[in-house]
Length: 632
Image (cartoon, rainbow, N blue to C red; front, side, top):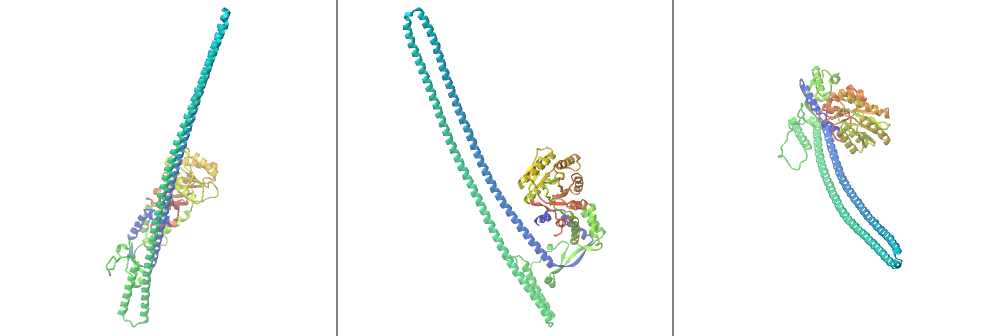
């Protein structure tokens, strides 16, 4: 019932104008009549309304408390998620630094190896050069020896000995140079390897120290956040418990005081009845004694009734023996309450002055104009007033009676079309959502997807409004809230192609429902409406029966223009049901009656706000009562 409490509080701002209009129509030519009403029934109804209001307030308070707890839990989860993301980012940074350091170390090792290889090659080249020089020197020496042998064989032996000594010395020198070069290269290589090892050990030690410091800082920060969250949660729980205990004690005290006062009132009423019976039994009492006894009993009953009705107070706020009279402003408009007599007070009845007017042609014409201004349309307004007048012409009616007749007639028209959206065994069930720009298609899809998901259905959404980037982003937000995947395509791409791919995805995943959003289209733009027909043709290539539901979302503030929208969309997309949104704004609401009367299409749901629970199944009786301003 909380939704239809919102319906009466926020829906149809024009309902107050209907109230004012009916008051003006009845007062124009109406006459005052004194009628006797059952105040006991009214008091019971008022008490029931009070109890419903208290229950609704308690429910709203509980919903607010649960919402606050959910918000705190979400905040804690968000903080934990941020901490986890920070930790993962830090680990990723450290891993990246380690990877870069390892790559630098490997590059340094490769560089040193390359330098050693080049040194080795230079050494080998130098040895080859020295060997070649030695060979050439040997050849020259042999040639010189041969020449010297030819010139003087006598000097050959001495020269040969000298040359042998010189050759030995050169060989010894070359060998010493080679050994020295190899020793120098080996020493250089060993020194380079030692420096590299020391640099690597120092780098690893520094990284380990930095990682340990970061880990300790992150652990300290996480512990502080957890302690603060726990302290806030305990403080909030303690405060709520104290408030609940105080409210319970106050309510118990109030109920006890009311019960005592009601018992006293019943006792006094019993004494009055006994006095009346005594009078009947003792006819010898004088008239003065009877009047005095009646006045005394009436004063006691009035005092008990006032004490029972007065709220409990801890201190006297008026002087003793002061009696507070009700203000005339507390009486309902158009009705003057007469003072109750003793019997009226005892039996719960009183007399009121009610304005009634005879139902004639002039009054019917005024009612027709009032309904037309409420967007009900000429044909529907004439039909409604004609049915109201049937068998009642010439009779006098009050405002409340007219409201009852009008609400009953609207309910009769709306009951055949108040049907929820059907769900089929076939999967995926394709739901195509159409409508003009700004009618609330995207929000309605998000709310329906969330409700279907909560009912245990698997849902896939296709963001077919590829001409408006904001629509895709808005639908993704709703999808994230409901935990429903949203398939998108680049801005400006073909929506029919996206619908085809979404059907393939839904079939592959075994989804129960596929909801396809479409771009807002004006019914007087043939090219845009043709795009909608193309989407229908394309998805029927995957499933000849698709779409299984085509929902037309209507903006209640468009008034009679909604009739033209339904006519055009029904011709192009075979609309199967309606969803009426924005009934919490300046909408007059009567157009919904005209739609039901003219087209007879099922009305699945109505919306009176932006919250998830502001979209609910259509109830014709509550709708009619809210429309005419009748207490339901």
